[in-house]
Image (cartoon, rainbow, N blue to C red; front, side, top):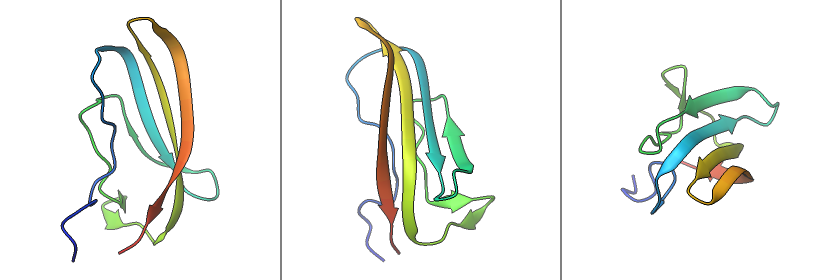
Length: 79
């Protein structure tokens, strides 16, 4: 197994006043959430490996000079 890209998280160089990262499956069910910018998703759901596929992420944050920013995208999970 490749040791690279085993976790999904946010790289940043600011201080957040608010932070929320959520991962959704293709049916829109939230499968992971964190309010800690240091936390990273390990590809599991309910303590089991999530199936390979495309997952949607939503990042909501506020920081110095940025208020209520929302970033959406997708991440592919392949094992």
